[in-house]
Length: 182
Image 1 (cartoon, rainbow, N blue to C red):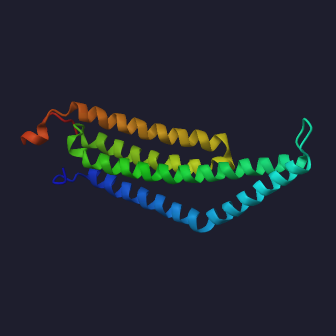
Image 2: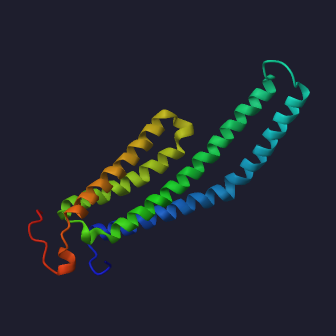
Image 3: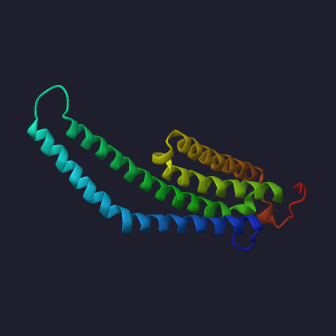
């Protein structure tokens, strides 16, 4: 599989490596700068929640301080989850792109279509995690764009799957791929 390195295969390998390294960099950034602050804020918010709940244990409504602390804690957990999800998604798309790069000799499509699917997969693999990170700031707009990025990646994978299903063993038999339109 490594003998024939087409442009698409090289692009998917390089793009996958860039996505993986970007995911690692984002994870290092989060661990080095945000995680400690998140843990301190987590501790402080939980302490405020328990103290205000202990001061006013009864009543149908929560005190304003407890409600504010609970809202802050919910936002903190959402921020934590979004950063972890973006980190894992970008690494997963990088691995997926690299695996797709290995299988390019078995994608029986024209070079033009293989290039389109490769670029679409990498674009979707970058769009989804970037806009997942922006969801707390931009809300549903960022969520919709992230979903569109995921859809791009799915369409690209189905396109490559179509090419793999069209493969008839030509690479293994050594017969040139005649009949593939350029």
